[in-house]
Length: 628
View (cartoon, rainbow, N blue to C red):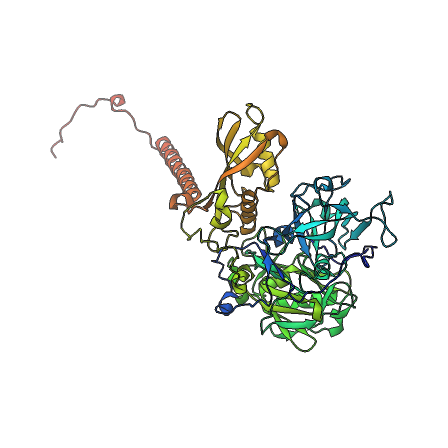
């Protein structure tokens, strides 16, 4: 599987913003709360029960906006950010390892096909280019400042710097703020091929969104991230300070050590036993770095092998299998069961131990990812790093509130159900709970697109529903009355939903004038009886949020109805159909062989015993017995 590792900057921006941003102080700074897309309240994860009745208190007023995540399918979490006047929307990766926010520019020479249209400065009445001076690198015309970012996985982004109004959605109490951002001219690597539009940089640096908002005095110098659990998603991001829970585990973070958010990791324990390693192994190069833009975790080679061996010994009763992608040497185990809430009964607990002996425990979902081709199998989400840096990506902090207290140079960890963090935060204006759409029976759910966000579970919960069919009605408004090419349209839908063309099926259509109402069915791949939770969630969200981009010749489209059906329970006859067919064939063959054998035996018996016809015998006169 693709390794999304937007990490560890190789070439940093050569741009000094000394004096460019107005600084200020405000004792009433408000934190900006950014919830990750909420999931069904039926997500009864193993962290849930210990937080009933407890509330995470906020220390200041707040504002929030929705975020979206697809950690394992796409490798990142994204948020919606609006730039310009009128605002132009973008889906940006939340990345603590980047220090600049950037989106594709309208005249980008080398940009991939992303989720939203490119930014058009000419359409924004509030856009201003950052003019070239001695404090920055300049473009070829010596008119505008430029930026460049290169990442460890060899992707890069470069372009010009502009300033415009950034807004965080209608749910945000924070008024739109002017900020500097990058307008891309060139993308390479994963940045070119990814679906997300760009990056929202939360790292340490004057171009970071955090630094710019803090310098303006609108938020405090702290933010928090909380990623949902395996297969569930959801959670929240908080820009600004919140009152930390009393049992949050903190460790020191040295801002002078590196520009990245580092922690003082000293030991790793597996099933209560420390790995036999020198504690300095986690202190090489940049130290131990937290990076929300990285999917998995990467340890120095010796630490990785020790960790792998320790986990493997504890699960030696499981069968070790190959990973889903032959291009990677994944360490995978089968036979653990499909219920991820029971993984802690199979896989060992892992503890991170910090400098002063503070211990933070990791659940199996914090170091495993589900095998995409073998049901009930899981693979290690921790790998060997190419250098001495220890890199902890999003997988390690799932169902964990991580507070980046930059003002006090510390980072805290607190286990919680991130999918329901809004309930912990006690926000009256938080989105309403998603009603349970499924009760485990063979029922289907129809969703009106206007109420879909609250009428459809944003994530399919393992054990609750196995999605077997997704159907939807779309209305096309085309410029002529010619019937659209349904084959080409199906190919476009398959491309947008990342499916095989065989999975997209035309059911029927009707039309009135230039309006066509077309019903489509999305079915699982031929080798599967149902969709994986991640795949079903991705398809449903893209349909609900109108994220499909179809060719312009098909005109505009509107989602009319969306229907999700569970995997149908097959009758006894359907379950045993092939067994019955084979039994009938075998019985028929055996019957024919028996019949043939009997006929052959009878034929041969007739050849051995020959009977003379009565008519052919000589007539002998009857004689009486002679007396003695």
